[in-house]
Amino acid sequence: MTKPAAQDPIHQAAADWFARLQGDASLADWTAFQTWLEADPEHADAYHAVEAVWVDLDGLPPEAQEAAPLAADIAALRPPRASRPPRRRLLLGFGVAAAAAIVATVVTPHLTAPSYTDYVTRRGETREIALADGSRLTLGSATTLRVRLGRQQRVVTLVDGEASFDVAHLENRPFVVAVGAREVRVLGTEFNILSHGGRLAITVRRGRVAVSGGQEGTVQLTRGEQLAQSPGGRARKRNVAPDVAFAWRSGQLIYERTPLPEVVADLNRYVATPIRVDPSAAAVTVSGVLLVDEEAAMVRRLELFAPIVAETTPPEVILKAKPARR
Image 1 (tube, rainbow, N blue to C red):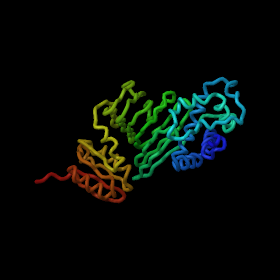
Image 2: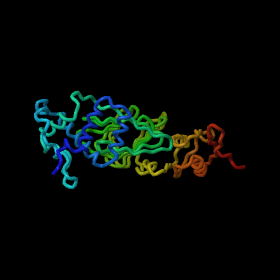
Image 3: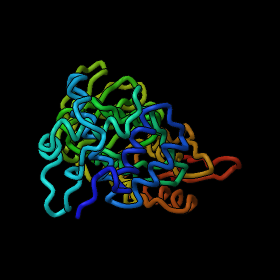
Image 4: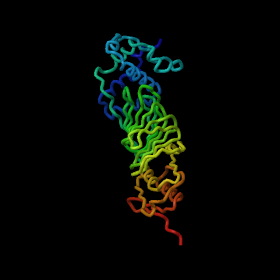
């Protein structure tokens, strides 16, 4: 016999988390929730179900939301995995009464907008995040971003660094990434954003995004297209090999005639000892694949790719142009 949802410990835990995170949840709350969410795939399924029910209820009149007794059986929320229909159709199919029972039983009376949760990586660290909506984010080294999954819109703010996004398609809940003055809006796609030191690069590997907020107006990007801007320059749209932008996830930084100062800006997000470009090497460009490794090894490889020499003068490494041969 299938347990009613109210008696299912996983479903009840999901409902408790949903109610808890609607108020002024602390960073510790969000960290604990993330740990619970990633512990078992069933946890994410149960949380999706509770969250999706609230989304559907949000548009109903109050009298409809209060129509059911608290004892209503909501087992239909969690049928066996092999037989589950698409979530949207399932939720609409089991009716207003069961939906109202969930909300009346487990959601606090006065819901407020969900709080943001912050994710931060240290230098040299990457981290994968599974969001409750089914999206997956990968944070690059020295990256800070904030996430808020609202009932009508999902918002991520990339404060600094680099992250890739594999976004779950939810037609009525657009996914928006705020990066500086720009806004990247998607419904379901995979893309990468670098935002650091005045540089910006938004690269699409799958689907389509719309980037707004810049002087260039709204820019549509599809697979293999990138919107890139250097410090002090204008943003421009160009065609790229999208896997190059995602290579950092496998421990590689790929460059093709890239100005040395931009390469060094990337490396400084990975190394503990700051690297500085001497004016003599400011015009040098770099082509090659740098492995993300021990910092001294990364600097040595960089010397092989470009006509530069590295001088270590604590507390920094200075990259200078190689003297011309006589």
